[in-house]
Amino acid sequence: MKLLLIHTGGTIGMVPTPDGLAPQAGMVEAALEAMLPTGITLVRHIFDPLLDSADVGPSHWNVILNVIRSHPDMPVIVTHGSDTMSFTGAALSQALAGEERRVVLCGSMKPLGQNADAEGNLALAIGTALAPGAGVFLAFAGKLLPAAGLVKHDSQAEDAFCSQPQAPLEPAQSRLFSDKRLAILSLSPGVEGAFLAAALDALDGAVLRVFGSGTAMSDQAVLAALATAVSGGKRVRAVSQCEAGGLQPGAYAAGAGLWAAGVENGGAETPEAALIHLWLN
Image (cartoon, rainbow, N blue to C red; front, side, top):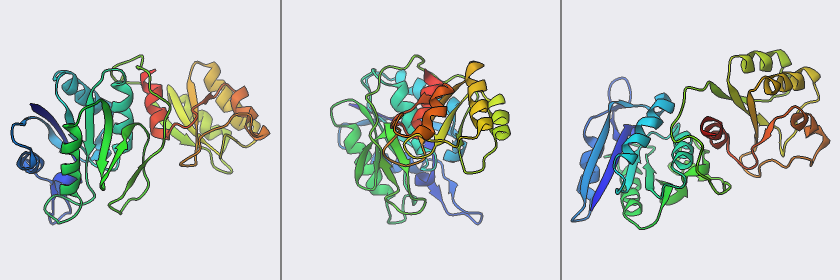
């Protein structure tokens, strides 16, 4: 049996240097191969250069997807930094929906060789990847989490992730990521309509983080900026600023202006999942 490793970079494969942690070539592959059960052959795709996950984006998701699809019969481990793991988890989950692949994301808060979380996460990833069934998961801190709704809720602790339940995924309209100009915007008390208008003017669409279960200020300039963008063909998809619970349109009159402006209801989607939805659909 063969197992595909796609190593993008991240803390798991870094070593201390005078300037801080930096990637070291060959580190992750050697550690993973040493842990493999007898009879498993490792197939490798290593990013060159290795990336801090802060630099990972749509073009890299396309590389990962193309490599996965070029090895159709193999389970996959993707090693990746934690900072944008939630975005990559949503990207792979939605882009691969309906393809019946088994993909396991893995990273760590401390590098291999520091008697911390890296080895355990990698061992969990191997066992998960070699198990039967399809899905995209994250192996982290002794837990196996669905990757579609990942949230990095702690910037320091080894138990850094949780996963918010998402609606069942349907195959996306696109199998790869285009060069759409998309971003996540946030409402905050006092935000000006001119700011939102300028931001939306520079974008093809946006995720809008709104208050609570789906409310926004009654500022007519804010609502006009949203309505103008939508009427101009730009999609604006709302999600809650709360980590859990999602949106409930109609629960409060203070949300009526959003829906009247044509803003989409992202439901229980995380901001990351909503952004990927806009990219692929």
